[in-house]
Length: 277
Length: 277
Figure 1 (cartoon, rainbow over the protein chains, first blue to last red):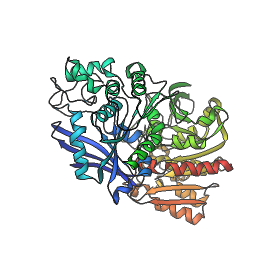
Figure 2: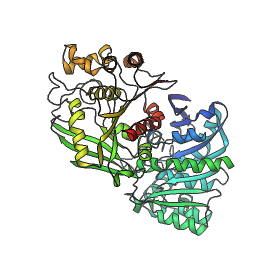
Figure 3: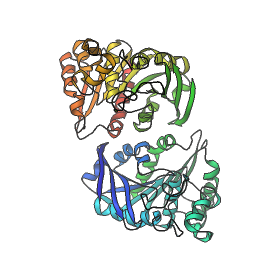
Figure 4: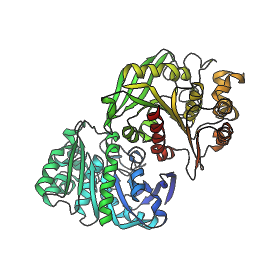
């Protein structure tokens, strides 16, 4: 593993690291914020999955998570949103290929050789954190924004017991019924929609729900409401009697200004759940 | 004046605006964060001057000021660091020309027609804020990072009474004795060093000081310590018996992670001074 940068931040260290990924069969880069508490003992980790077009870097510099991660003694991991590099398939559109992995394991050409973000986050990157940093693998939480909110919710629902808490900012909530979903699931997984179902948070919420508390924030002035379909998730959460909250935040849009505005509350939510984990 | 974007953030509005500048003789862009308190009454304003290579945008998305501006009910203005556009002189180097205005009024070719950042911030932009936004011009404070810390300190020392408080993150502290200064002051102001003196914070601190409290933060692991020359400013502040604090922050570098780490304290410092203004 190679250290690309380390900057002191809020008493801890914001690092950026690169490693050879066996699952994605290419080099992968991630950001990891370690709070000052990690100097003396392993700390819990919050996964922050990012949205379309993002790398590991966007949320790391714009979402304002480190201040509250330091307050609560929680590490935050910022993975990339797809495999990258020469030899990795791509598409001219912003919403397919590099920067748009959609947190699935692709089975279709040309994506299948590298686009394995589901398994990368489910299996490989957790092991790499555990082996290299003062992280307590027994205490994990997960959040994400937009496509990353979709990833956080679906990964958590497929892994009962792994996460103490789950949250999302403006998640892609119902991709099997949205142009942010149908295009990508078709491309990565093929036309048989059976394989899509585990990658739809509203479907999974209806079928199984989460075994931990969940917090969803959605801006009422989000320019992508028609693509995100938050009403499907809100309906499913209520029907499931899911422990948690779906909050419509008046006047907020889809930007990092929205994410940053509620980061303190999301970190507080996860900190409370992790303390009890 | 044209609105380029407005995003709700921390209950207020982060806007970006463009206007025709008479002083710089070109269009200028700035960011302005208005806290929720501005909906009901004019609020104080904190100027945030940015460093080399930055536009209005960098600090606006990376410095994390809005959370604390909203807490204290303070607007934050993020000006650009130079005139820009076709017909505006530039240089291939990152530290001269566009993105590197150095907060002076250029008198030398080819810079003199547009590079008037001193007068732009001293006179024009304050009037534009006052005319268009719920800002109280009687309550101003100023801060900045690197080249912007230099600008904040020198503008404040040349304007007794204007600012309730001044702070800086890793300011270029002694430009008349640094390669971050000699090159630019020569280019913009010419070889006669008499005109340089008002643009050196350490010189001005020795000669006149500030009539308000000052807070300086400097990272001990800043990669540009040799260019910033913080020891000159620390010496001058102590010799002047300047009301304020010069803090060496162990392990921090020159990045926005450093700036963000101490933003809460800087906003709190300015809020206290502005309450008493």
